Image (cartoon, rainbow, N blue to C red; front, top):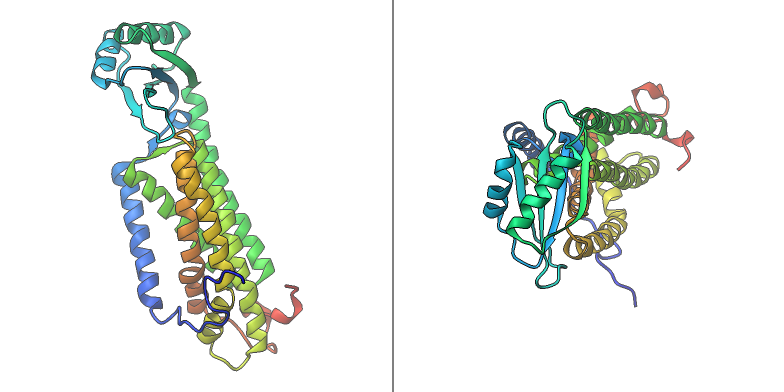
Length: 321
């Protein structure tokens, strides 16, 4: 006896509310961009430059006392946060002191780091410093540019691939869906002010790969059905294609989300931003594969007459699955 998330045969109309779902996606993207502009991203040391000192102690982290101890050093705006994690043992208190790069210096000097550590020991003699990470402002600026270029280049490469694999209407739909996923993920990070670092960029690239895989699976079935059901309206063929791949989509996304949920809860704060980005990306990526990518293709239309030139879009019979 096997588990069935959906019946073997379904006939759900996924496009009955296509104007509403597509409009909802457009509104969500606008809100995400506004959140990005208004709140900005909570860049990590990777992108800002500076030094992050991680602390551990038996006593509870008192942000006020830590700040008062460091203030005489004249380091400017210093960010001090307590790190909460359900995996921490009782009595383990972890803090994070973030010091932005000082002027044109490539990194906070070892003398300054030693002075900060000594100042914090006056607050709690049992405090330890398990890790210190430093990134210069020049390097961090290059990382910002390179990171967003990497995301943009991946979208262009996918546009070209889908264009060759299917036709231009499909490539436009796929890239719009990927753009939707990336913008919504960045918007959530801006809205919740979750730390945005290089790990999140890696997560964005992972989301793009996962989402395009889901989209291509449905596109492939759509291409087969366009040949098989030549007289059926395009929207009906699309509905059939989504229904036929629904079990695979839910099983793949569901099992992925279960694993990500375990990592999100138990994985610790170090990878939490990365895991949250992928968790959110799987959800919006599954949604966009149907309600964004397919809506765009439906709106652009496809040429289903094999006698017409393929530059209008879709000589399906000559392409291997």
